[in-house]
Image (tube, rainbow, N blue to C red; front, side, top):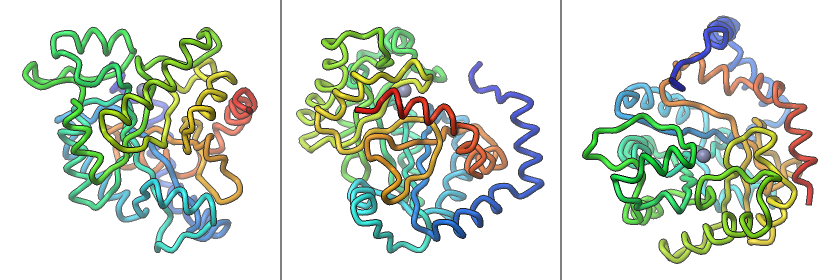
Length: 291
Ligand SMILES: [Zn+2]
């Protein structure tokens, strides 16, 4: 159901493709920032049926951006130094789905891209029989895979991914960190997910990603605990490029992309029009999460 793309959005995407909105947006950003900025995108499920399409998208992204690892992001935000020939790209995947490991990761490696995988620790290594129930409870969106294939990645998969890619926390239970949660729940979701990832993967976990994206899924106490937990980067989903001195490392904005989208829709999403669309929401969420 969620794979359907709204007809109006499709029409706007075709029209913006006709107007070359992505190319114009890139030119505009080049004029304003040169190549000194980083675009952040996020995917969800990347099922087998989208493999060919996903490869087209990755080729496009490889041709227009440079991969960004945590140390690149850290250096850029601290010094503004960006020595690569194109703008950067943080390419993230939410929810720890096995399809990311099975289909997206090999393509990332093929195109020399760096993936950032935000995983809810409570859904990792869950028994196959209960994983669908857990996914539904955690409101994770997915396409039902082959019954023999797990729905979520295992710790072994994540240990393999961390060699070349970035792993971050996406809470324990894939829960929205709104005002309805008390401090004990918030602490558990934010702090213990970091601790578990660090224990299981034997490395420091520096990145966190909020669940959801609706305004009600953000809260000041949540932001406070993310800061106190010692995360270096925290990701939201209100579309804006990352810039030196302009971006708060704990309020990095991402733009949503889905693996079944056409290239024209992908280009529309990255044209910069989404950054404009989210202007007021971004301001409100920034205010709610000021700590
Ligand atoms: Zn999620």
